[in-house]
Image (cartoon, rainbow, N blue to C red; front, side, top):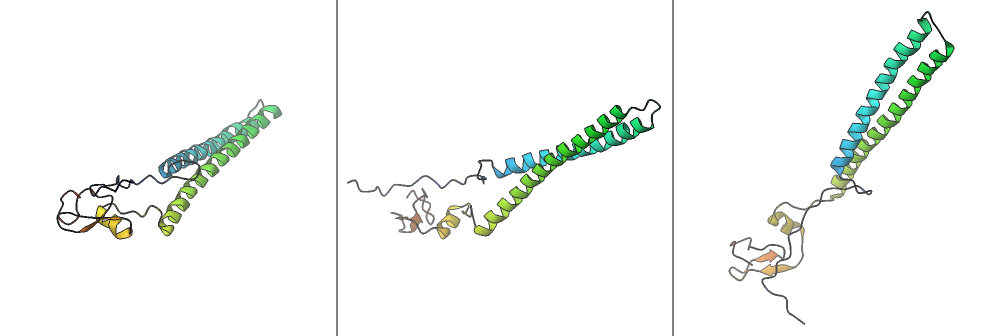
Length: 151
């Protein structure tokens, strides 16, 4: 059995980006949600404009046909439905991102310090004693936190 080297320093703890259960990062979720929401709202507005110009225009024109009226009417309804679904999915993704953010903050997920001192305060893992000053350092640091000499 080999004794651990006193010069051993584990690789630093790396922070990973927040991710959702299906693998998307939080930023991806909010961007996709915002894009779908904007496209959905634009389709709803275009459907409303199409409804006003097409349906009312077909009903008031001199060459009125029932088929033309219903085509423009149902076309506008389809744009409303498709736009509503896209806006709903986009809004759901944005709400999901906020819920994920709030749950992560409340439970303390990803609450790892940015500096070696903050991580040392939050962890009680293996400590390495500095040969120069005798200070106990977390195992992931490569230099003593007191005297800055290599551990």
